[in-house]
Image 1 (tube, chains in turn yellow, green):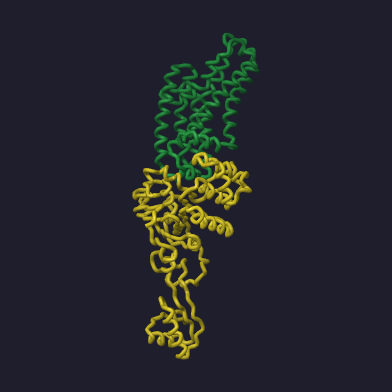
Image 2 (cartoon, rainbow over the protein chains, first blue to last red; image 1 turned 90 degrees about the vertical axis):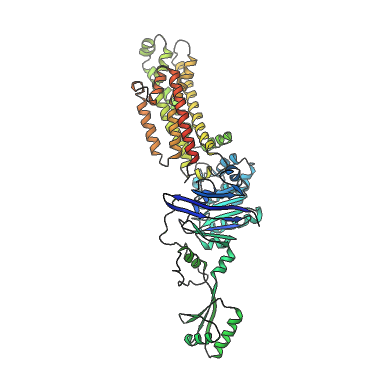
Length: 330
Length: 238
């Protein structure tokens, strides 16, 4: 078994009776990019703050690098880099001075400042006051601060929030490089599944403070499953033909929809339908989009099962489950 | 570690204008007395304070020292706190491998260093005023040194409160208003009951039981500092 970089057991944070985080069990192995996914107010930020010791859990245990956070907080934080929500910076100072305030505490060599500025591509603007930076530049400065101490574990809370597409791409590439080049384990939170899907290797989905799914990205995609849609001239008659072959499709807008069906079966089915003089217009595979899956899981009920979104389109943006309590940590 | 934190905090103060307060406060007090003594030279130096003009100058300045110290504590502490409060940088600072009690101590030391610097500046500028006025008699070096320093010790309880309030309250209007109110009340320090800590610096300036009130000031400060530090170390950082 690989070493767990982060492990929480029954992590709970209560705010005046409501549970912002409820018995959360995280397990993040070394070298992983872990996507921490959930709608706004699900308790992601609260969890990350607890991982950093900024707020105290009501109950439960946090172990980072196999050590108890309560007892070894300072030793642990020395090896952790973080960016919590929107970036923190001192607007009246320039980028180098901002990093210097952290460097003096971490006690790393001065040339690390140039290195991290180069990593995030801020070398050119290093001498400008940070208050004149664009949001994307501030965000990159925040990541530079997180990288300054050459951490083994990086906690990034919504690092692409408020960035334009090119900024998102840039940060995503940056995050994807980390485990490969420097062996850093990354936890990145997001409310966008498409984003996590594009960079993470593992994923945990939280809703209302509870972990509702935790596995690898391929397993998540497998769980999404796929369906074969066959569009043909006489669907009702086709339905009977299919039943005779031992397949039980459902009829959906003039199409036969088969779930969990193998290649051989499809071949036999199509041959039989052609023999029965059906005109076959389309045979297509549709994967339930992950956005749908996410919505289905986060809303608890199967309310979205029939939305049947088109494969590949994820224009829905942030899935928001209705009626979630506002994040208590705000 | 505390040294590194202090160096960091001093770096964060660059270009915030905070040192201007340290400079302008004492210079302003000295300028006021330069004007007072310059315009009324014949009356003050040759008549009222004839026996000891230097002591006259010091006591004229001294009556404004308590309010100046209280105002300086309020302004400096809220400026120090606003550096972290403005972009909510607490979450970054406190996620670094540092003890919270040391972060708290470093902010206190920052303010103390600035207050001490202001005391020294006050002494220096009063000497300059005195020399410029060609006051006769010996320069009272010891009294000059204690001019700001003794009332500062007696004023420390307010710093203990401001330190906690400015660093933990989100709404800076509360500590600032309270600090300014305390400064205004301190003007009447001489006529207040000794039981009210706000009267202590005035009593020290007046030379009544100087060491008792300085000791009380330091002791009350120590209690407030300890309580503030414990709360700061335990509270959740939003």
